Image (cartoon, rainbow over all chains, first blue to last red):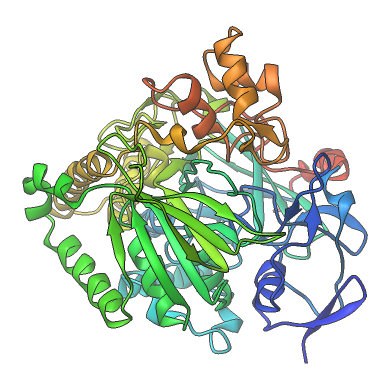
Length: 84
Length: 478
């Protein structure tokens, strides 16, 4: 079983999917908020241009979920810090 | 790490694949680099090779025979060692170095780890494609609103339909394959809203008649959409999205000839997902800092200016595919092959393809370019699109700058282009560096000029650690 964690919760994925594809497949549409208006953001362009889908991977912030292949054991954290 | 070759190709989509294959067949040593996990770029986006059985996507593609042939050619050359294929590598800068180029990239195959790599060659092709052009509307930043390219990328790359009930809007033929792909994967496509009038094509009969394959492709999509009972509404646009924390409803309206919503025609359609796209903007990040001259592409954007051999005006620098103007995969493949022939000629390599095949490719390029021009004229941005905006509609998603702020900078201030708007309002100063809002901001303040993307010295974010590793990476290990 291939799984990574999102804010501590296990999330299954199909090997070969990006983090964004796995997040969307799980029904999530938003996983951070903007720093000024606290507006929710998820995936918009899906190809690495828009930076809406930022997550923190294993403590490294500012990662585009649509470009990173999911790997078993990755720890994804989401929230406000990714817009800083 | 350093990789050297005769020819560096950035972008492994249709143009880059064809260029690399032609150059390799002609005897050159090629470095082909792409940020994706598989060959194909956006048009032929695929899951990584080892995931193809778990994520079947072949039925969503067109021209797969050509894709597979190019893959086979590239694989054969990779086995002989003359092709260095670098997937999951993000190029952040390309600079002149002596008589050739140094292309700086980071290997992100183990992201978030980054390993810096430098690629060196006397000849460089930038085949970085394009991305969806967006026009803002109230609610376009709600989660569940995606670009149509994003919807397609999730389908082709991950086998994921982003929603259960989808409305698509914008203009151009790309709406149709995305609608068909969503329907094929079980999503209900509640409406496809095409802003243009179908009669626009009747003003361009010659390009259509000379490209029967495009007719056939369009007819196939029409068949798929009819089978799934997908309503296609022309002269219609999505003028608003509403929802609490995510999109729940879109407002669509019929349009006047100039794009003004017609009073009394607005309808509300329930949707959990929305896809929008207004053609494409060429991805010129690597070309502009190298001094490549741009030219009006005829669709409201500027693209790389090239001669009939795909040479830019910078010696040794070539461009092919959507970087030279948006025209589709068939055009890109032919341009890529022609660019490689120019490289073979300019480097005085031995293996030039025969003259007749080259003439056929040039004829195909001319035909596809005429078609692309006609398509751009048939699917323009509606002149009055900004009538959909309210003053508090976000235009810049990253810095949360409103239409009101952009308009004020233009009306009350000196801002006459998107760079000046950026200085006054911060629109374009955020994470995406104006890639998303740039075309729209430009239209709000300088509608009569084609959009030229801003110069960006760093094409993708890079860590200070990656920059610090540059000194080590310039030591040759090959």
